[in-house]
Length: 483
Image 1 (cartoon, rainbow, N blue to C red):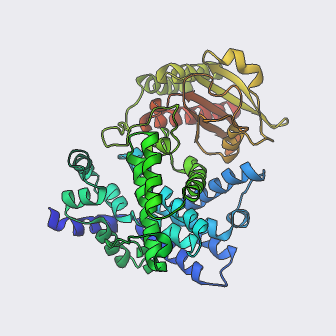
Image 2 (cartoon, rainbow, N blue to C red; image 1 turned 180 degrees about the vertical axis):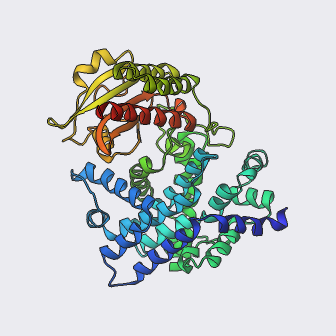
Image 3 (cartoon, one colour; image 1 turned 120 degrees about the vertical axis):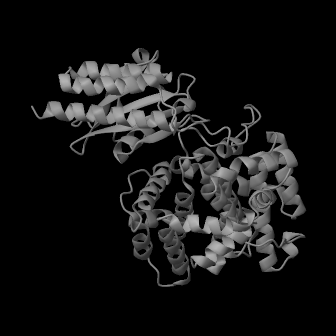
């Protein structure tokens, strides 16, 4: 099996219908770097070829824009203007890579592993800016693609993940050695094969090597310095992913910096900026339950250290609440029997609240003249208490308003600190996640379901059931509007 694994994996990648488009995006994004005449329109045209990428770029631009400037960004060209050419180019490359490893199977593990690679890319970028003498943008890309081989194994060989995990846990092996032991292929060699086969630029392969640079960063040649900095960022991200405690993570990462002769203040400043970058990407990449790497990255002395992500910890994505399934069946019959809308919606909210153990389940309706969402029906102990203050103005930039105006189903995580875009009535219970489902009738915005509770309740199976109920609600409204 080990002898044939490399060719088997390459065939699996080749069968992925989206991989050629990913390779073209990487090639073109690198070409734009070398083209002094490249414009915002050139970058926008590249992004617009991929609808999913376009969607994510606009969401990222709005997340940053709402915090700093206010307003709405509706075009990719505007996003490039606001965020900057280089920022959007790097985001396009990172998000394109993420699209290649997305999978419902082991989704949390895959997301957490990608976020680890993204963090090391931001850390390398910010260290390069602090230290000088290196291209920050090139360091971002080189550091990101350091883990390309491991990410390919995680995505395209999920049957081996449990064995790789056991090798790391029981034998104390690092990730690269564990992958080589289990499948017989070194991740960097696999990544170089894929890069060559698909024509990815040589600069994307720069850190795909088993060579190691040693010594003090400030005393190395530029090439060795870049390699050493990439290794520092990668090892620091690994410490966060697998450290035993907040104290151990801080101690070990600062020790890594000292051995490279990077000042503590410089390393800590770069780490803080990298964390801030990660939080801008969180809403785009996270599943309903926050991946372990993000939790560990933000852990402090007042919260227990989250467990490492594992194959066993990844919940069954098809787990579904029987109560929601029964409600879907009842609603199907109710639509045929022309049951009153109030009864249909009340039964839906009750099933959502009790079937998932939610703290809050609310149906909002849009008042167009006042341009606001008004809570009409709700379930949960806090609903009656907070209902008078739960109206959502759509002229403001609250998270709920952003979701409604985006027209997309999105998650809202409990903030660690008070935030201007989170209402006082939100997260008054024990739940750490809210899901918001905009409601459209004949493509026009009509309302929104707001559901708040424990992240574990929002499995992929339950999310599918919730989307079905939202669609049934839209169908009920549409059928009544025709009369």
